[in-house]
Image 1: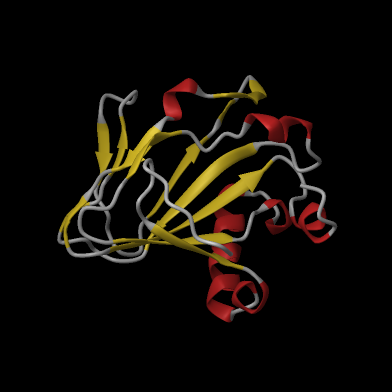
Image 2: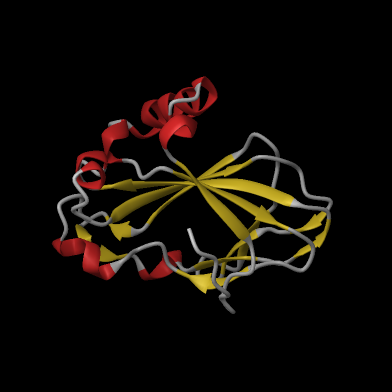
Length: 161
């Protein structure tokens, strides 16, 4: 993929597709997420692997993508964020609408939040805007697992996203 600069997000990322998604460790992660959420793996996007170096961040954003309402997989209903290491300082996940909650990165921890409202799963939950705070010391590694309403993988294979 071509790289581009984004003022809202300064981290580096890569997608865990093809051979990566068939790796035994990745399969184990997906199985644990499936057990936790009771949603089949076919509804998951490929893992997005993240690296934040000192000073890097992701400004306030939402994981809900409006145009996906009209697509076969539907919208992202859940985010499962995996913390892959301890960060020396900073790098927390901040939810300003949840009493300014900041979740500190801890290796092995998974943070799960909805993108949609329970009573209307096509509507964005306005409380779930969040940001990745700047890493002050060290490096932060993480992974996003986004879960859709319906089968994501078949649409991806058929290039119908």
